[in-house]
Length: 315
Image 1 (spheres, rainbow, N blue to C red):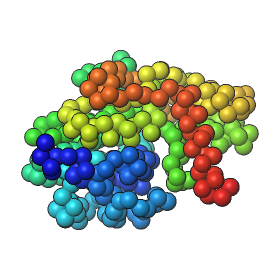
Image 2: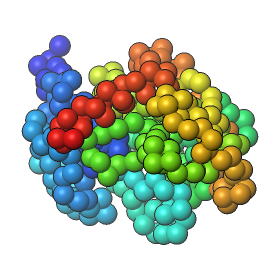
Image 3: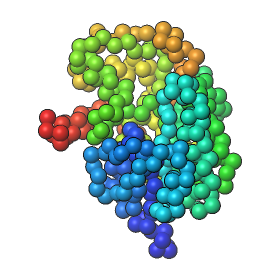
Image 4: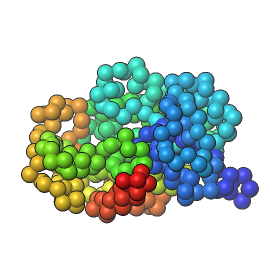
């Protein structure tokens, strides 16, 4: 093996490192790999762990600065997690959604192709319409909202390029990071129920939720294997959103009577979110060695992480 191909000489550029997955992946790269890591985000670094990697503040819309950083750092791999992931924000600002979610991928695909850089791109179950889930990687895509359409277009750019790429589609990511400002369905439900607040939860949308630690690990596996193509990354058990929240209440011994079932139509999500997605993840298991964490086991890990962070913050 050529020396430059050894793991120690892999150089990873991570975009969106202040994001939910970005923070978890940054930590995983530093703690569990010999790689050289450089993180970027559009705002100052919010990760309490600041050692073991470099950080540069770059707005993803500033392609000139991003290109200059890539030239100077000379990554072997780029993991592109930065995105506008809010369905409503993408719908309300289509121009910004286009630049951040699509044009940035076009820019990175071109620079990766010219420089032999492997690109990992994060996509979503929202490229599907939710009529025929669970989905395989090559199933027909038909997004129902602006966010899904932007990811669909970005996927198409990579598929038509000569870039070495991996597309990781994922579903309803949850978990915990050291940044207390980051929330998700599980943490939201846990906090509301712990405060004895009634919450409205959709009971006719179905998902296979993804533990953020698993998704970060999938990114590491993608880098390790120089994976090529599309991979579905999620858990394997289908739940309604209400069933997920009920599992939260049961695990943390909270009052399920505070959970009120509502329909997607009740909250204006009947047409702009797929009803039932879910993934067949056999390809990721067979080719990457990916193994998802069952929901209740992930809650146990989250509980341990919460206690560790409370100690870290002096609570």
